[in-house]
Length: 227
Figure 1 (cartoon, rainbow, N blue to C red):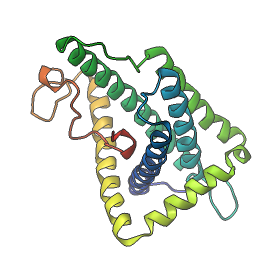
Figure 2: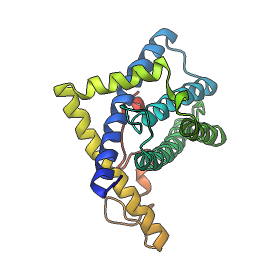
Figure 3: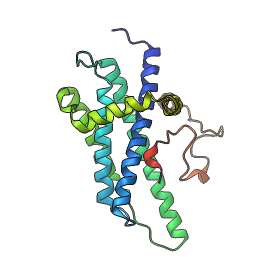
């Protein structure tokens, strides 16, 4: 099957829409959990359990979009693209969490008050590795990807995507997601070639020390990050 660059961009765009809608649904679920829990802050264990569950279903749904629905066969070109996008997505999440935690800790020290540390490098890495392992497991045994919850996520994403107003909004998000992936690929190639990556202000990355805790314009801001 011929899989040209246009098809690749279209699929990355589709994944952006899928990730955005999934994030929106998860944000609603997370809001419901917080409502049931009350004002008590989440412990680090609770945070990472929920993150692992979220990543599992995100990986599962992403894999389901790599399957031909007619015969259940895997679209391997899409699978390769999806694997790369998931890897970049998780690495971006890791970096964002690390920067956000450093920013919060800095604020706590400046205000002379203790701040709970909800970020753990090792645990964060383990959660990401487990999520990627689930993706590989689904490739080896596709039937494991089929479960009622994942099917509900899949159907809900398709239904929201087909909604005129919400569908358009999420497609706009998908476009910027596609652009961010392209920019990250370009930056990665520049790093391999030894060319300094540029930030949005035109200077080398890392030159703006005041950007700690702020997301760059090319970062995909999905709904589960909204507090």
